Length: 303
Ligand code: FDA
Image (cartoon, rainbow, N blue to C red; front, side, top):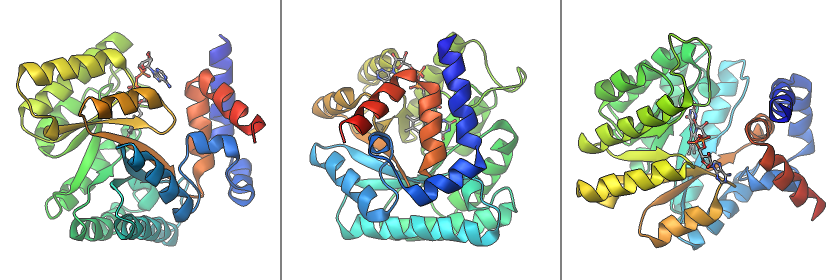
């Protein structure tokens, strides 16, 4: 009950336009750095360097919420391109991720196509992966279409698919690409979203197994220990080389397990949120897990 109330409060705060604007001016509080790489490229790349020191790679997520104009989309794409350049300049082990709505998908899919192509081209020249995040149900077809157009020219671009969405199993077969499998951060209509959670977990495992057996590179993005262990066992049983997949976790979640997986010989990639739009991302993390509130407040008090 308490979890539902705190979740609803932080969801409300996440969408509050006034607080979003204020947060951009005030800057990232110290507690926020547990879950967010940084507001500026320098800060974020310092975070990535720390992960790289113990063998963890990173995917820097170029945040962008509530964009309104084509220029906003171009600005987010430019920031992402700047980060790609600096990752290479500093010799870091990192890639990038982003939402197509942050580069104009809601304004016009062609804008998102043009901006993603620019990002993909720069990343391609630097031998770097780009992952397209998956979003709410009404955007999925549009995201998949833009992805397909860009992927045709740039195989370094991959896409996230959500285990709690019925259509993902068909998208997996349709796309034949590097895929990040996630459980899914959105819910809603029963005709679109799978229920209950146990079935989502089973579908998650199924999607990962299918993609691994199809020979596509698989990004296993979860903190779920049972799933992680079952995938390790499956890969060993089927003699799938660990170079064909990687584990991904969000910055601030299960750091000890991340390091342990590295020591076990697996590639681990940390999702590092980056940019001035950190506020909405942070509020959503606090909404989904009350324990994160205690970590964040604790870090602020230790300041
Ligand atoms: P779930 O929330 O079911 O947790 C499973 C178990 O993990 C818990 O029961 C607990 O045992 C353990 N656990 C979780 N957090 C823990 C912690 N901090 N410490 C210890 N144990 C913990 N979604 C989306 O819709 N589109 C997208 O593009 C992406 N992208 C994305 C990238 C990456 C790298 C990640 C990790 C996640 C996403 N997501 C996403 C979010 C995803 O859909 C999902 O909401 C979260 O990952 C939470 O789901 P889990 O798989 O962790 O399982």
